Image (cartoon, rainbow, N blue to C red; front, side, top):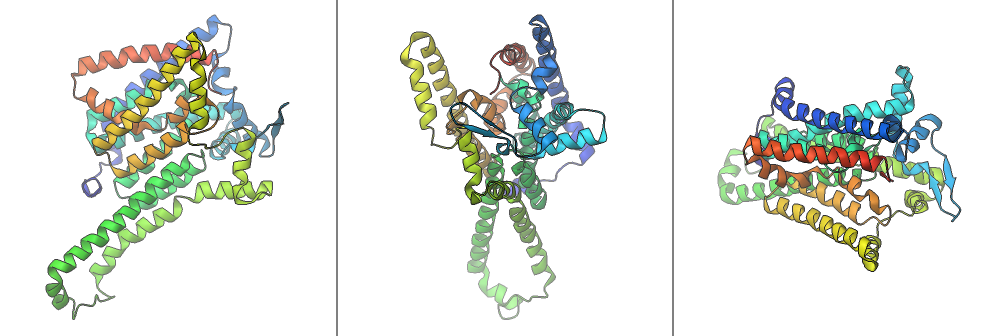
Length: 415
């Protein structure tokens, strides 16, 4: 962390120029995905734009923007689907776009996702570039773009917005900009429940920094206590010492970042509890109405096990096991490669929440999409290969991803 914090960050213009290849490549991949989706949808007499802006969660977000909170659907089995399950930042931005332009709420959601996905790509590049260098940064962005469910990045969903806020918050932590990290974590916490992962990254990294400073100060005192006592006038630090106050300022900024970080998640969860009259845990009741919760992965394991009751579905079961194993392996590789602490904390929480949720098993690839540090080991491996070979690999995967995204969105799509 010390080396990462002390390395000079480029200027904004310089950072944009440095990220330009990654952003252009990302835009090209997303454009390919949208073109294939448009052609596929037209062949099936469907509207690609409707698929992107007016199905599944996108409808819930636009209803929050239009009607506010309080809308719910009661199902025949007794479940209650309340729009209180959806965090407010995306609907707020949709409402803002509609207020200042002739666009609809759905149009606003698409526009927000369009710009947020570019901001997310830039943030992913900034983090990967800082840790592993420019080529790895470009590869990380392109790998995120060509994910099989990458089409979600272009939908009026909150994944792109959340990933952008999370990536830039992590970058702010890596560069020691603690108040900025706290504000971005606050906004991430207003975007999705998994905002707690960003809060955890800020808090754990800050606490470890305090512990390391305390140990370093103790070691300095043990090795140079006599000299320090003589120079400080009998061993007591003078309160009017400018150097002492200068040392306090970074710590104060770190504390400020820690205080800001949880306000988004905590504020919304407490507001829902007040709104429902069920106290601080009221949001959990809202999620229970969607049959969603955290059970340590039991329900998901049972879902996978049930796939082996017949031969065709057994292949899907094998695929799910391989997918989960790949995710765990990538995280383990990131640990072995000594990824910075905030990335490991953030990725660990996002992965745990995605894999251990008790419902919506088909959504797990989408829920894992913000865990972009999982891609860093692959990005580093690609960066070490020749540019031509990496381009061929990424190009082939981009075509496959575009075709799968069009097929998926015209079929079952993300729940």
